[in-house]
Image 1: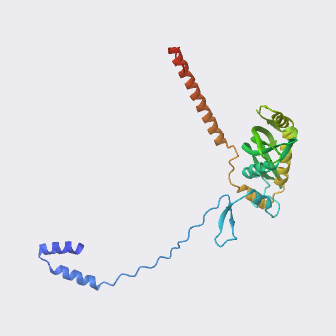
Image 2: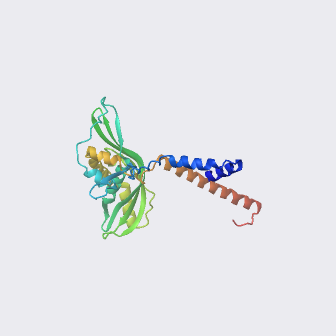
Image 3: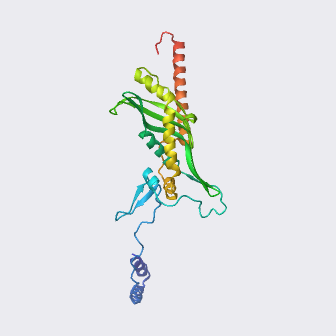
Length: 281
């Protein structure tokens, strides 16, 4: 295209010999060097593996989510202070997610007989407020947990394990070293039958003792964690059972919006009835 345009300009000025001269100069130039093949690697860059361990038993390693069993069965030496901590300052490792999930597992395993053909089992743990930490200070390691409030879901079963009825309870002050007298368990369950009365009596009198036994078992496992176990517990995936401050703020916002909606509906009904007393709303 450039040569054609140049040719037109040259032809207009009567200098037709310039094109032949330009082409001869171009042919005299050395050929351009060949393009080098790209040596850039097509391999993917290394990626951070969050909340996972790598399974090396396969040809292609894959990410595997850390489980409560991985944490408890990890071997190695006991936890000690980090190499950077030369002045024996405070170190803290958050293991809340693992602690809540393991505590929930132990609760589900516990079953209490409350009648000739009646058992009560805690089948889920929800909305846990609190945390669990492993603290290293002045070369001493402490395993601490404090579940200030949690929602327990229980189920009453017969001898064959069939569910008869269920309900909820609120557990408070479940922390390191707690006993039955330190715990508080409340429920709004209203008994209507004799089995209901037996479960109600258990929730009021003996449930704290059953939960304290589970807390003691959990604490024994907690303090037995090795350094590698604590490291895996830190990487444990987030638990949906933990009630975070953000989730709590969202719940308060939704509750406030629902309250405003109900107040608005009541005001509307009152206004309609004031204007027309015979109107049924």
